[in-house]
Image 1 (tube, rainbow, N blue to C red):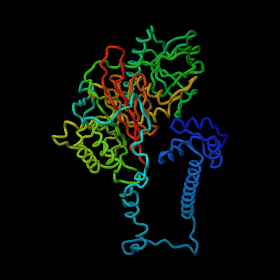
Image 2: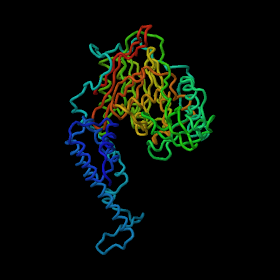
Image 3: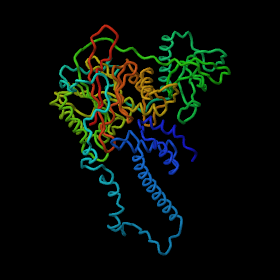
Image 4: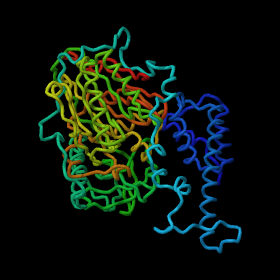
Length: 562
């Protein structure tokens, strides 16, 4: 392998929230790359996977890297052993067995295989639940954690807050907007045509283009294919000229249908001091196209958000709890973290609990049992429960946008406080607008974004700005490989109807609470991370009774260890 760029490796690790304090860490990382012949991206991926199972894996130390190196050696040793064994078996199939070799027994109905042989080679044994299921005993790592209840990040005025609600008394949870604008039932999918996808993407370009044109008072758009010696303004969608990751040299602009007939032209970004781009991003660009074959960009118009609502419906203080699955550790199926969360709900009595998928990575009967456990276990608290599905829920429709859960029948008493919503969805909680999604858009978009900045720039903030200014819960195109998108329903249910007061965007990346363009964005983290406990979030919301400048209704927020 070639030389290792330690700065690029450290930057890739920072994307996933991994930092360091010891000066010897960069040298150790280079040593790991050279010793084990690992590419920078491969080492970063392995480290991210390794640290997610550690309680304090966000800060790399030499000791942690030594433990990681030990496990890497064991892993490569097993891979090599398995590869050699497979190679040996393959070669044996093409050679004449020697005299000393064991003769393979022929199995027929008259000459069945012996019970001893069956005991070691039986498919029933190889594929029994005991061979691959997590243990039914409680997770030792989760049970022995010492940081439960620790506040890991805060936002707003958190002093003198008791962090307890009124158990849903006086709480109102409603879908935002007219009923026809919300996804409330399952639908048929896998029938879309390429023409329909093209129509949705064209609509997105045209609608955002019209809004930008009106806001920036742009007279007219020019075709991306027409040569221009003077700066012209063009409208289009960012794309990549290959199947690889977007970079500064592979950016293309796909023009809109009205002015450019969908033509594609490479873009030169060298004249831009700052930019942040991703595939699928709709931009208005000022540029020179001297030959008709390349745009030299000089200015981008792309930061325009929908207006935040100003009306006041309720001035009562409300506590909202937000948690995101998995709700059990990877080495156990006892659901101890879920039971601990139920205890927290009963103790703190939040007014509203938003529970994002992955509720359970298993099948329908177990899912119903878990739902019953949560709903019945929180009746005494009285909290309003909001369940958001996830593409990681094995039993549910694997399509985006995703319809609400429909397999659980609520009792008459629970129908008033339990709400099954779609993924994504927009809710009004006592007049405060919540944008909810369970898709890891931070990870998906962070992996595709290319940016340049003259100062310190926070990647999470940049991505969240894109979500708000592109007016979509999922503006990335093409989508991540793990996404299965139905674009006809994408057109109806995925665009943001308004800029929410609070955007809940769970991610495998590091938890945070931050104000982005007037919207409080929350990543509560996962309730469990591998074999260890994770985090959840709690918020205080209250509409401000003021006729002056609009204030955020999110007064305070915290991310807390389970």
